[in-house]
Image (cartoon, rainbow, N blue to C red):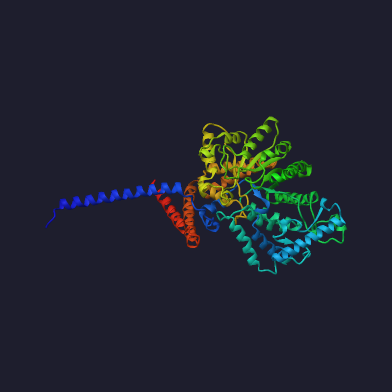
Length: 589
């Protein structure tokens, strides 16, 4: 039977309409599925593949960018320990051959016995030894790390690093760093395990100076004008580095020294290096003296430490080198800032205090609120000091009701309290909601709050980009943090420039130094924009970076699913499809 052309056209038209309807229905269902996935499942925590991110054009561009001053970096966790060991092996083999580590459980037992015997001998022979001397490894912090002995170890509990498979030891260090990224595995004990490996090595004046030179050379190669190093100088040194009264007791071997005497030694090394690096490289640094906030049982000790060190910083020889006090440590378990109100009010030093590094959502964060109140008190008493806050993730008030009231934000912006942002550290320590950089509070601070302040002609919240503990998290310095901030928070060129300028203005360098650095930064930043045609390529490079991130994330989830032995492979597969849906979501807009 013959079918007329009109009927054929009608049927074909009907098919086209049907296909369109079905396509639209599928797209609608995808959108619905995305909606429910977004509500019900957090994004999987992705281990950051730094080498792959380094291959992006955006990384290359930002690596060459002038970055102002790095304000939040912990001295013992800034330098890459593996790189430093390689550097020692190549440049200082005589020192490298005298690096030791604890030789297993048996070695640890021998060291502890040696320490116990030494302590008893010192108590018997020298009643007031604690005033300025303690035996090496008396502190438990030194039991597990790498250690340097100028001559030889005090007992046979140690094994030479050069006689050991260096590859295995380095892999062990990297493994500790890598575990920092795994969701659910991170603990503050892991962090301390890594930092103890560094601290037990550099607490010798020779290596202390070499390590300081190493991190200064590395940071100035990252586009920085200067750095403020969070640390607490003083501590422990082996006997060949320093002469003191302990040398007069011949029966005691391998004595090390502590207290004010060591502060003087380290301070003199740092001052020498500061003058040298300013003269040779026009690169500057200051120290932020760190004090652990402790727990309720140690509150009196912390109060004394704040008083002692605030007085120490006021000494003429410390001015323009050690200018600030910090309280650090896990906030959810430690003393709150208000417990030290009397001490912090009396202290004349600048403050750069860890506050708001927590996931807890309450009406207001007590540590952040206290800083705002302290700033008001400083204004009333006309105390001329800078206050900076590390992290400040909980500045929004009434977050438990899923709102962001601006009371604290306004106080911080009006009083020019500077926020030291550390995006990668916050992500790795599980302080970023849903493991999504776009949900980092700084995205709101920059793209909502500060935009509103600008429109209303009010001062903005002053912010900077920092790295916190990069070597612990297995990356170098601050370019990667800028990379994440620029891409995920969609920073404009004016945002980048402002944050670099704020980092210079709110540093503790002298007024003359800051004037010089601001002028230098303006020239270097302008040249960077022109030479790299940044205005025309930044948007494209950001999008390509985010595409690369999604690709890496999808691969990482596939790998996790294939290695899964806990019965959660289905969830990983679901998350993989969620990533694909998010890509579709972008296309459907």
